[in-house]
Length: 222
Image: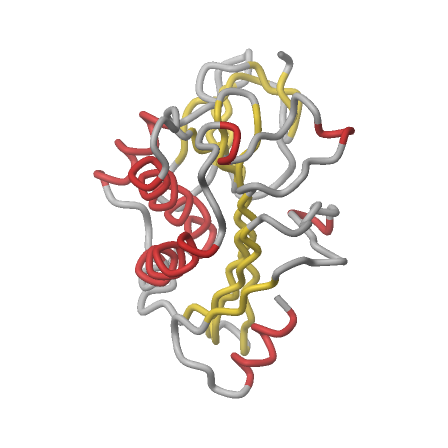
């Protein structure tokens, strides 16, 4: 992602992509470490959206597009769920993560670098057993190289717009939403109740009011 930011600072156009074979300092949301060994797709893309009113919705828009793409590319892949704010899931296991980092000049969005970490055939750390999955678990023939071009094209198209999610996107998210109806311990206590057009998580408190959360780490009660 640092390389992509540097390229963006040198006026790299929308859709410029940087792909790593392996990362030694992969990171996820809020600086968490991300295992990025050989065999996974580790991609960062420079995005210069035309609309910028709802940058927080961008990761969800990308997640929806990638979920649909992967189901079409990988035979036998089950429904890919989207977990707010930036994860792709199969059941309770994480398949991929999306990390969006914006650069601003005052109130003007200059660019966004979108990081994609997709488990393909890479080894998974023992400590992630039961928490992560990879495409290889569903298609023994899958490899990284054929996925690069379609994933780059998919992310490039999805990031042309950082405006609010459309009604069609909200409906598509509802089908793939892995949190709605589940009890939340964080970022606030309550029951997940979908998302807003700007990408906020709705959490209904036990006393009735609905909180709209734009960022945070999700912890469910089960």
